Length: 121
Length: 141
Length: 247
Image (cartoon, rainbow over all chains, first blue to last red; front, side, top):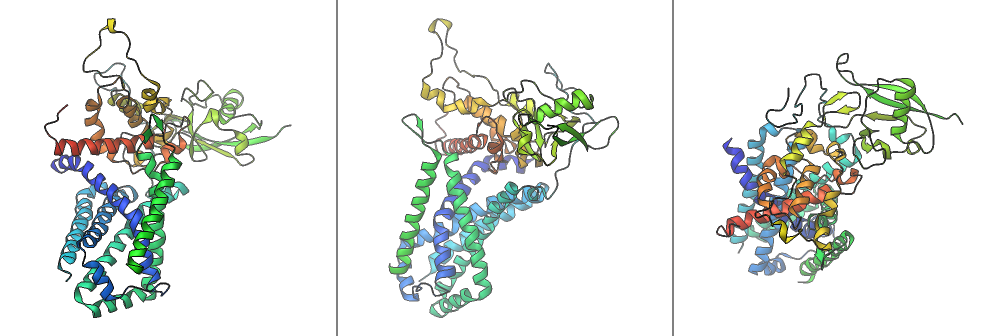
């Protein structure tokens, strides 16, 4: 099965992306989600205004940081969700569709992040 | 039916052996399995976080009004509830990831294996420091 | 002191039954008895047709693995006192075909062990005149934990991935491969790589971690698998970025 052969060669890469994404997600997402998703909207802490955030975004390093923050966890989630579908719903026979959707979604999200971070003034 | 070739041959299959079917709900049968599936489902909320971040970036690129609208959207009670759930799942991911990481790397210093607790302890400490740094940037940077 | 405890034992006769069913037996309850003692009592006094495997009765041969109240255990190391007064349910090891009563077919397991090439592979053999392969305590320590496996298959019963995909190599087999890969006397890591790196080799593992939890010898197969994933990934990147370094 041609699909399976290329799968074998990609599997170590996909696992590495999963691991890297997992590390990024583990260290960075909780604080980001807490601040932007809870503390700022609920007024516990003062949200940075539009201008100060844009000032932060002016640094290319910040944009690279945000790119990694968006891209790596997506590949982590794609890999993990793919295996959850295999094991949880036992639909391994649909594996071509699952793989394409999961990793395709991650690639799409990455491209979107890259585009947005490139075009923000 | 014996296995071909090698001696001694092991019987590979017999029609009267009973093979139990694995239930679709195998993960509900034991608490450890359910914890495992919840851990795997944190991936959904990790992806949700990235999606909201992308939405936020799009708001930035459209100007201050779009940013305002996005902030208002974040205050919607349904979104807040979703974020509370997300936060709990994302925390669960961090806690499990940082405590399992030492098992994937057998760290040895001068031949002696570093105890797992030390590695995960270091991970948690690093997590706190990194979170503090990020918070500082966002609050006072 | 005539305390009793009920054992609900799975019975399956391939000639008579379509599927296993539970049969209740009353056995004397002794504080120091293990489940194996109870099974032996049943076979001795109540029903001689009860079929099960056991040997050393001290947790080293790996023969008596069964499901006790839904958890994989060595019946020679599981005390009735921990379950009394509730009935104790004894079933054959999960994820394996049942041959009869509590006996499972371990063909697949044996086959997977052999596939891992569990012997020292040398590129060049040292002549006898040069003496033994010497090993420092640190070198022994690198793989010793993985060599403690008694092949009891409790980890296979605990692993949901093995239950869902019988092609998965499984915890004990991969730990065994690591035992040899990490042995300083072995030069065969490359030989084991193709078997392990197929999709059903190690990549099916999602680090549930139950295998390590149930292992009676603290082998930590989950750790072995994750470590091997890291090794396999590193090898993959090295072969991609440094294709000329073919060792």
